[in-house]
Length: 388
Image (cartoon, rainbow, N blue to C red):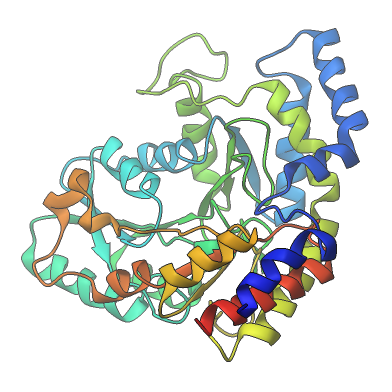
């Protein structure tokens, strides 16, 4: 009997059930406090724009170092609203990596702009700044689109190369809107995600490191000029009195129940982040020579929304691990420029880095309630699967 089969027989007795993301363990820990928060909302009855919204926004700004935070209905809204506030629209170019979730491209297109796809760095899986520079120069030479914004994605929790991106933004007069949907809790040069760019959109989808019990998101601002238009657009484009429409807007509000949940989750988030780091350390030490874990540029820390590595024979390894009872995930099997909805924006030469990663990346279980024994067992299974 091979090693994988042996481990399949041993898993339950050695480490029990392994969850890819364990929301049940977290809920058990904080359920009483969450219930008290939800009952408080029922008591005051302000289901929209309740006091918990203000409390959450203040806490998010305080924890991230952002000047202001605006809670909104989803991570996608947290990207669309700033684009609208900047006046991004027809004829404008927004530069995004093509190896990410489709929400990034959707936000650009919903705002009426043109997504310009950029390749990724093979080690960090984040936007390749060298290719970004080439694409921006190309768009400038062609003169068909106005260079308006750069939207880097902090993939899997690791911040993009913001110092170099900021220089390109300054060169072309573009605004950086960070897609931090997966990177809450990440750091670069001593600053938290939320303070690394003029604008950051983040997601609190339930599976995120900081997740609500439904869709939720936030805009983290370090540009005071963006506060009024983003706040207005979130509430149907109305003025401060919510009476007159002063611009085109949307219903992008976060409901009070989700804010109540997030407040209790935020209270334990940084302890959970330390637990995530311990699991990542085990993975890195045991698997770093067998595969290619996501790397970070200097002075950068991941929020470990996911733990992802690149490996040959990815699909074979994944199948073997799943049979043992070790869940895995693939983010993302198809780069954006290969998707039918975005085919009109693909380049003839393709994006080889994105295509390479799509065939090799694999995400392992990552949550703060994994035990060290479970993490080591996951590594054992990965090692055995590689030997097949």
